[in-house]
Length: 494
Image (tube, rainbow, N blue to C red; front, side, top):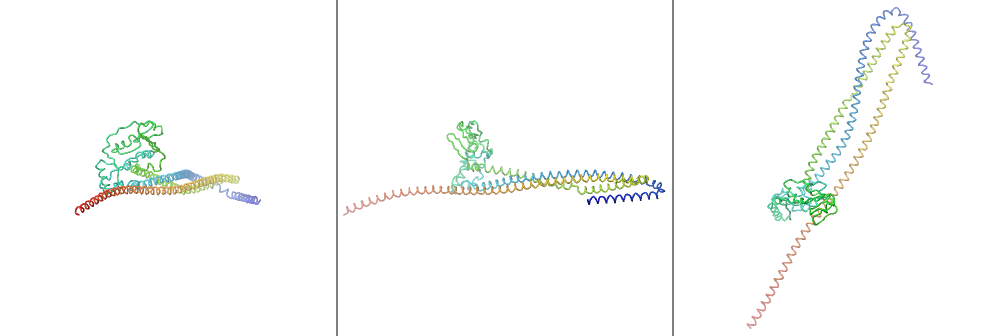
């Protein structure tokens, strides 16, 4: 009710104002009839000038609107590019984290393998002694260092070559004898040697059906090819047990190392955790170095790509012309107001050209036109508000999606870090157990050597005791004989 009352009061006020304006206009008209003709001439000149000014301002206004539309299109396009680039950045960062994990894994594997190679873990004392002894060809490789086997066949091939992995590969007999003399002089045990110049020919056997030659899954330098043929030329790898029945005297391996079939023997069972880990350490280290270099290139390229994308986002942000858009919008508002002002002046002059009896109707039409103009302007404002609300809702949805994705990413990162920590702990336990196993094995070997030495000394002492007993017996007999002789001589003298 209060609102209705206020509306009536406003309408009454407007009506009174319109009546007052109309009365004033009539009175002014009566006083200015004499001046109408002179003012008409002046108004014609003013109308021409106003039309020219209006045309110029309308052209400027249209140019501003075109510029505004172009800037707004560019602004929206740039925002979309920023969102797309940020999405790409998230994917690239996830990929970088994964590739960094792979790189760290390979580096850790490299460090562990290099440590085993440098310390010659698992090799006898004699091999360690010769490894860096400059008094012979200490650069001669071990068999385990010159052969590289594809990973899926390592356990199988190692089962065949295991007795020979600690063998040094020397050029000839003289080098082997030189190493043996060194071991003997320094009491460092015994070592085994392959003599390269003795491997000159090889008679290949028929390949059993359903197998592949072991030589096809190994890599070895050309100068050692005859040695490889000697060791693996008659060795074949089977996919299943059917090949065992038609081996024709060849050595047949199961690809995972489960069994080895010789001409008259069969060996097999479960595959140990560390089987296949000794063969090809040096070659594996070389390949790891190459893989690490390749992985570092991948990581570096990813970082460069991420940096490029980040620079793109910065560049896109610089392309956002929010201030320019606001300035043009202000210019458009000013020009629109100016055009409306010119239009109003023109209409006022036109109205003044009409008779005083038409002036009220002209003013009413102008009022209705203004209402229509305001209505259209309000419709445009509502449309803009609706668009802003829709844009706000879209931004809110995007922020919610981003927050959910960030939460999932943080959860995945925490899960990965926990799993990686558990893996590191288990790996440390495995390394400790392996070191303890190697220590006990070395103790056992040392005790065996001491037992053999003590047995030899015992046998030698037993032999000495036997010889001494025999000598004593002979001396006792001699003493008895001498006593008898003495007694007989004394009897003869008496």
